Image (cartoon, rainbow, N blue to C red; front, side, top):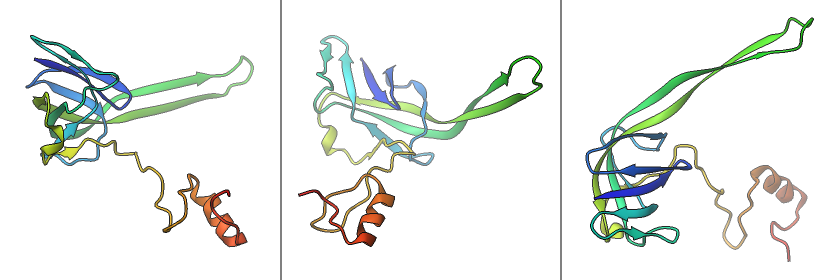
Length: 151
């Protein structure tokens, strides 16, 4: 049996026992994480999601938090202008071992949801006030004494 899951803007075809490198997740080594965005389940009776398969999940154990290979970007500008620039980057990754593929019953497990390390979401607004996507704009509106929501 295999599954196609989505995480970090990418899709991965996985089987139990596979080792996978994905975008950094907010989990420590040894934690069990669960991916709820399963796009397809394969095997004797394949199931396609529209867009995800309801109740399906993939569970994995975090092996380690690692860094990817160094990517060097070199920029050389026009002739007669001796300017050049070198930029480097190492992507932060999470190393996982797939342990289980659940066809149903994903909501009943106690595994931690696989959430990216950089996803903060919206700030929590005070009671009775709608959420504002920009906290700086929210502070300016409060200072001016204007309501946070339109209406």
